[in-house]
Image 1: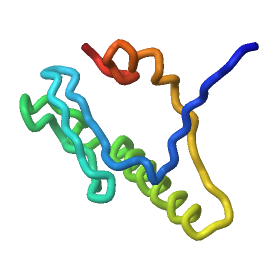
Image 2: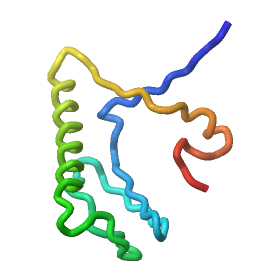
Image 3: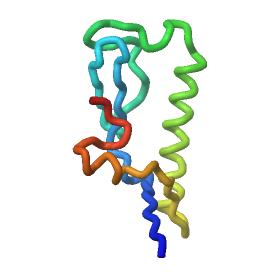
Length: 103
């Protein structure tokens, strides 16, 4: 017999957004409900995250956040639930790392 475990996340499970600076490795965490815009640059090393006039990136992130909030609101009022399958986190948990974490 073969068993398979799948992991799902509901939008209501999202409590914060994390942005990692690729240059200095600083991690910035923003409460989901308070997040409005991606920072222009890293608060530690000032590495530019997005160009000053990069409105495409800014609008894409805003639209993504707006969509998450809209779907979340619909599921609270509606007769259905919405979740997304995520990668298997069990393989890295046993080694002390969450999926996607860097050591």
